[in-house]
Image (cartoon, rainbow, N blue to C red; front, side, top):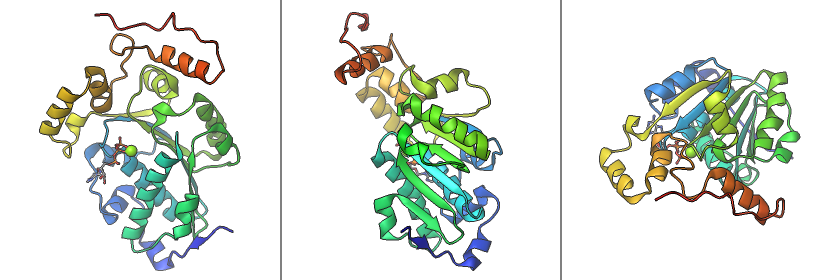
Length: 264
Ligand SMILES: Nc1ncnc2c1ncn2[C@@H]1O[C@H](COP(=O)(O)OP(=O)(O)OP(=O)(O)O)[C@@H](O)[C@H]1O
Ligand SMILES: [Mg+2]
C-alpha cells in the first residue's frame, strides 16, 4: 500500500501561488531564466541548457510546487535510466525536507510519494511501457530528454492532450538525432530555453577554460555550449552509431560501410 506523507494543513496554506516565491522557500534564488520558466504559463517547454546550469533543480521546484498547490495532482518524472529519475526525485525530497517535512524512507525505494492532499509524484525510468499505466498527468518532466527513446515521447503526448497538463523536456544536446533535437529545431508550440555555461554565474570562467582544454571540441560544445554537434565534429555520425547499436541488439544487420569517419 502506498504510504502517505503527512502534510500539515497549515504548511499547505503557506505554499505561495507563485513558484518563484516557492523556490526561495526551498532555498533557491532563481537565475533569470529559471524565473522565466517558473512563472511561465506555457504548457510546453524545452530546456537546452549546459551541464550543471540548474535544469533538474528548476524541474524539481515545479514538481513539488504543483504537488503541494494542487490537490490530487499527478506529476511524473521520467529519465532514460532509473538512476537519473531517482536523482531528480531526490532533489524534490530534499526540498520537501527543507520545508520541514520528511519523505518516508520507503518512497526512495519506490521513487514515488503521495501527499496528504492526494497529490502524487512518481519517478520512472522512461520507457514507453512504464508510462502506459498512467493517465492524466498534470506535469510531466523528461530529464536527459536527448537520450530517451522516441517511443516514450509518442506515448506521452496523447496523455497530456486529455489532462491539459504541462510538459518539460530538459537536456544537454546529444547529437542531431532523436525527439529532443527534432522538437528543438522544428517543433511547434514550445517555449525554448537555451542556457550555455557562460550564462551561469555558478560555473567559473576558469573551470570552463580547463574543460575546453580537456575535452574534444564537439563534446565541450555539447556539454557547455548547448550545441547539437554531428557528422563533421564527431568521429561517427549519430545515426550510424544508433544503427550499430541496433545491430548489436540484433534488431538490424551489421553494416559499417556508411559510418562516416571524421575527415582530417
Ligand atoms: N538558482 C540557483 N541558485 C543556487 N544554486 C543552484 C541554482 N540552480 C541550481 N543550483 C545548484 O546547481 C547545481 C546543479 O544543478 P542541477 O543539478 O539542477 O543542474 P543540471 O543542469 O540538472 O545539471 P546536469 O546537467 O549535471 O544534470 C546543484 O547543486 C543545484 O543545487
Ligand atoms: Mg540534471
